[in-house]
Length: 332
Image 1: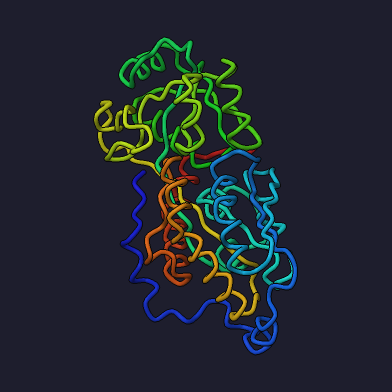
Image 2: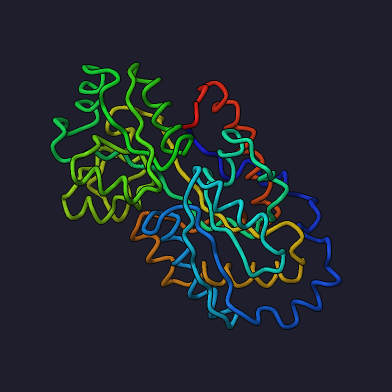
């Protein structure tokens, strides 16, 4: 489950500037761009990790561009509906997508889409990343990972795991975890992470394995319990939560990344303006501090390059599509 973030950077070497088509017209457009508000489509529900990331960069990005940047949450089909809206939007820089490994890679192996995630969207930058966290409802009789595994194995197929759509990162991480420990569970799809977290707080589902920022406030408030974080080091904002290695399942690392895209055909000069504004937003210490408080990390400078990010996205597709096929996931 480890996601290599740097080994693909060399793939971008020598790559031509993405979105060069229409550059001549783009120069004229970019002189005045933007002249009206920009919309960032988030293909998940409000309050989830992707929505939070988008809203964190929207305001400083808008200030850099001199226009309002609005976030629109559009859920459904594990993100395919929201992403599809951006794919089919006018390529003028006014409709963008902030998505994840799930929405901009994994759904390509799950759905028969009428677009290609790797060619019909132009990457602007990677925004950030964060580890997944294993959390459970407070009434579940397990206080640590070893006890949780024992509980799961004692009642195979009975535990309920909330996921923000079939084939999501959390869904695949859950499948990998259950395969590793030798048991099974029931996956309960939701229209985003936030409603699933609400149901876990209410005791309606047993557990979740999702980006850590979805759980930060609830773990601190004591309304759910964190079992482990799926990375090597402890998190600065939740230092009491053990790493997966410390919890007893060494090497089971899993994370999710976030990025920004525009429709194919968006003029290069417009893309350059957008890229400059979002990179400036990511460099804002206030943005970094707020993201860190949630457990999210700003992307490395290397992967903020559109070319390097595109190469990384392609490598992720090559990594995960075979996993999806082997899992024989059936969409509902």
